[in-house]
Picture 1 (cartoon, helix red, strand yellow):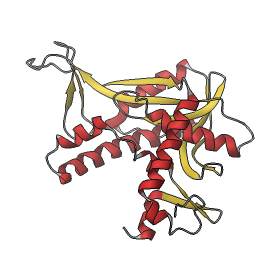
Picture 2 (picture 1 turned 135 degrees about the horizontal axis):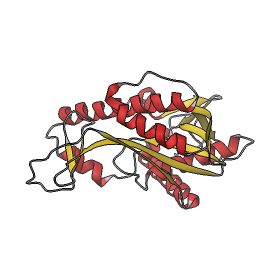
Picture 3 (picture 1 turned 60 degrees about the vertical axis):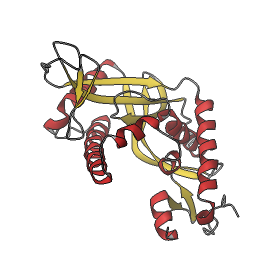
Amino acid sequence: MDLQFFKSINGYKVGGIWYPRVTAICKIIGKPGLEKWFAKHGSVAAMTEKRRKIFDFGNLVHDTIEKMLMGEAPEVDPLISPSVDAFSHWLKAHKVKAFDVERRVVSNKHFYTGTLDVLTEIDGNFGVLDLKTTDRVWDDQFIQTAAYFQAHNEGDLRKAETHWILRIDQYQECSLCGAKKREKGGEPDIKEGDTTCPHKWSLAKGICELKEVNNHQIYLEMFLTAKKLWELVNRDLLSQIENYPKRLK
């Protein structure tokens, strides 16, 4: 791989020093469920196209929710209106004050950078909030937020107390067997229920679920271990980056 291309897709230069991105580092962590999902699509092209549609959906939700958190009233695409409605109900049930969105943070202690979704206060607790449009809250999502939490607290006077995942999703439910259908990638993904059921689907329903980390230090250690592995795998390229302090020879 070309060195400049590697640098461009894996990190940023901040203050004259090149730092790898949190999301690039986290890709080294195996995701068996994701590998099974890829295998269902038969070809790289089909997988890539569906993944693009899912990312487009997620980005649309992210952009809309972040604007709402900052006090704006964005136009809501009908495609995501169930998700936005669920978020609006959640927002009314909690005391939420957002201070910043898409904030770049840097860890000079561990040499990485990243962009956190939302710096916010929820029901009196100040912390880092990450928005997800997945079908559940996965434990490994806290590895990413732990990295943002660490970097923020190194560089900001007001220290974060915690970090959360806010899962925002939408689905249709079968009134006959209780199966749930999600269609974020252009084709239905049906789970639970009876596979022989003819299915009678409801209108799309939104869901908004907040989950707080329960052991920050464990997830931070997981991230730092993943970073060591990422550096080992990419040591040949990293050794050529003069302004990366953690390069391996």
